[in-house]
Image 1 (cartoon, rainbow, N blue to C red):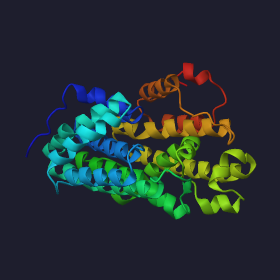
Image 2: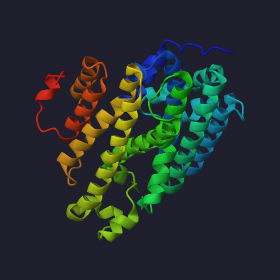
Image 3: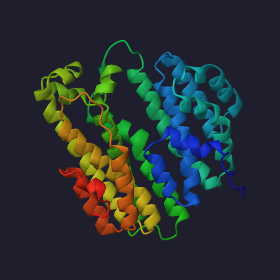
Image 4: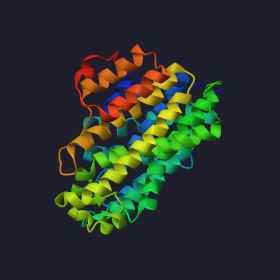
Length: 347
């Protein structure tokens, strides 16, 4: 069986550069899990970069997504897609790390092919879902001439599953195969919890980015719910009284799904993998708390400060990812009023 090549010296730095919080989870994993998760993340980030490059017309983004998707799936040779992206797409990226990622795609695809066959198959499966969700995004929002919104909660559920819920399933499948005693719950329940967890994390991103998405002429909150509140998508930022209840419902949906993520992490037997699994939920619930505190009128982007992230990591380490400690910390982060805990990670 071929062994996965170690990444080039630049790859860990690249991974850190294109991922702030998820990189921290990846770093906590044992190598048998870290390598396939890293490859999957880098490829997903590359396809997401293509989908989000608004300077390209939608039809070109869709064509490049399809070409890279075929290279990932192994149904087309990688060179035409990667060479075209390096020549015409990478120069459009204003962020250096995004350009470097596009140039690194040949290495990422070679790394994918060299993994264990089961890992490669899992990565191709999850990237198939992710690229389908990204293509839908371009189709729905890519014109860039007027504001569009998802029609209903079913479309929002579909989107959050395709770009994130499937990642929870992928993570679970990898762990079940690589860790003989992965969890205290049955595999089917872990996959279900992982799916909900991923969807919740994507909801956090959507709620955090409402103002930025509106500026980009897209709204992920359902148009029918906004209409029931007497709002069009373009009214959100000017009608905070009407938007507040809609926003509050989706904040609660996100919180509920993160709580399922905590059930997922609680069932993980390996302390190291439990720590990697729980970190996004802890950062996510803190983000939701900051969003609730900011209120619907705020246009300022919400982000958990690095100091707080370091404290969360220190708290996980101090408790050795103990189950009771993680559950208590999740509860406190979701409704904290005092700042003192950030200077006392053992609390």
